[in-house]
Amino acid sequence: MVIVHGAWVDGTSWREVIALLHVKGLSVIAVQNPLSALGDDVDAVVRVIKPGSVVLVGHGYGGTVITQAGDHSNVAALVYIAACAPDIGESTTDAENCGPSSPVISRFEVDAGGFLYLPLAAVREFLAHDVSEAEVRVLAAAQPPIRASALLDRVTKAAWRTKPSWYAVTDEDRIISPALQRKIATRIGARVLSIRAGHVPFLSKPKETAEVILAAVDFVCGK
Image (cartoon, rainbow, N blue to C red; front, top):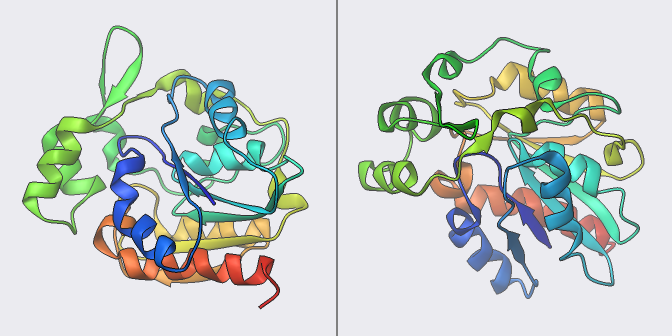
């Protein structure tokens, strides 16, 4: 099992989901991808794919990463959590343009290196409106920014075309609209499950998030 985080939330935020997966006897790696370029992020994922059947889990922009990295021969299934899933020749931005734009875009802060950050108020309002204030402040302080150009990098492979996929729609999401998520899930032919949560369900609804992942694991294991 390899978990690929998206923008502004890193692998440690998956800690409760990881613990639930460990209880089921699963080996889990949460990649700390650099968010500097699609190629860099894909390389970070491919480096940790081990022999055997691997389930890739991607959140947000991480969905773009697993779409490309999932072409690896050891990847048996893909799980998209409120995620983008571009087709060949498309970028994350292209995938997001298929639906209404989130107002969070106007709140981005850009540093000298071209990396996008969210101010505390935007983390509270858009990214993590359904978690505690203490968690919001930690997320804002520790957020991994994403280089804007990475959102324009185009995939050359679309693993969802050949690998079974699952998609968790977050019904209260303010980053990627639930309507757009359902459109993405339909396009890739994913098995769809809904979670009543915002954009970070692994923090607000870890049990429900783990259940989506375990559905893919059970399929791969023939259960």
